Length: 473
Image (cartoon, rainbow, N blue to C red; front, side, top):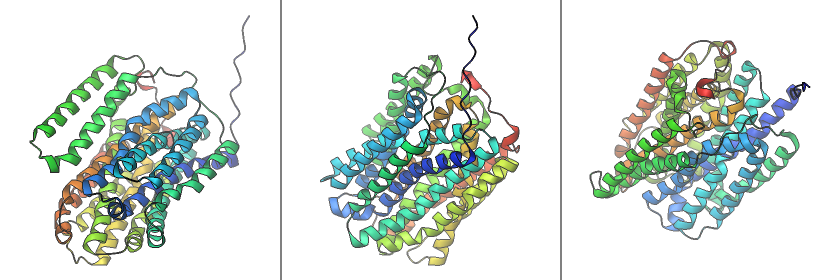
């Protein structure tokens, strides 16, 4: 007796698909809002809990490290147990951790709560992206949706610094975390009503050894970057950190290459387009996070601006990201990733070079111009990078596809914070501008990296390229 195959679930209407996108974008807005609010509030947090620059770096990177380490596993769990279920669990964990951050009485509690926020956030960004990808089967519509998705991050950057500055002007730094409550409540309600449940047809087995080794690699690399300027780059502690990173990385490659269902399929990196997307994601977020931290410390410490004024100064960066991200999505759909990547690399490089000669009295016009250029580059970069990574795997593995790129982003964020903090840690406010110049050259270098990736990318529009099942994905 032959059993007829189960009919495929009906494709949601256009209105339903874009409603799902809106709900999922709310989680992206939450993650981005929290990042930018915390950045502009770092000086106030430092004063409130008596934390030095190194402690502030850990306050930021405890979140990004845990987030980066768990993203791929969260994507795989969502493919196995249901994307909406994991998405809602992430919202609940993120909300609980936000309350703990707001109530933190000491540095240790705050850093621990920020790490717990990273656990919740790991269930949001890649899982929501997987939901969007499965709701948008048409490549052109998906490219446009990812452009909107990327622009939401720009909107969150616009809201974060200004909202954070206003909260600090009227309340204190704890309000930076209380603000998450209404957003989380709204996202939980809307996801229950509008987001359909989905999962991969065949779930993968957990990869605990790969998860542990990946987390150790990330922690060792970022830990050395943060602590290196303080303990000395040739000290025994630093050398031990190098050794741990190298051994863990070698172990990760060995374990993943031998597992039938690895945490990260290393064969994907044989595809130049996929590798370029991952490298580009790291470069973009190194540039963005170096820009945010160096700007926050420079404007509030060297220029003695209020948090609100410093937040308003970042509006050109956020506006550039918001305006150009949807345009980038349309360009990817029509012409492929090369043109938007070229524009992204050119803008980021120009913005970094504008700041390479920063002084204590650099004109406000030049500062705002540089921020606008970097924001435009960020806006152009996200859609081609995300599309390339997502289209590198079939829709059934969309959770893992989004998670790999998100891991690269968070690694870039952690490295950018660590590098920027290392440059200015312990520096007198009068010398901070000069000390930050290598950081701005590094931002320009990230832009140059995007130009190289654009040169190596294929110019075909996404509608002409179907996802290919690489490495048994």
